[in-house]
Image (cartoon, rainbow, N blue to C red; front, side):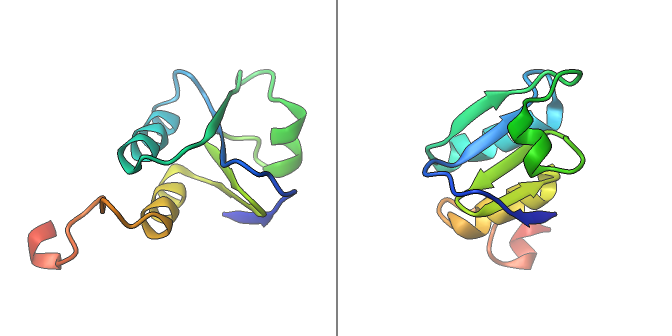
Length: 97
């Protein structure tokens, strides 16, 4: 899922502190060595920025410049393509199997 968003100079992750999917994205960001800001979100009290950016108001939500992504698998795939080193999975299908 993606939406054009307002420009942010730093990649921002809206994350639930105890949300497993948010944790997966934080691990990928750490493994890739990506600089980012994190905004912790309370499920019952989302910040106005998240409400404006994501119609589902769900976490994790990643904002990278003019792009907003939600759904952890989509975010992780985007991060792996945008920051290819180190890769999350082996390049060759046989090695992945």
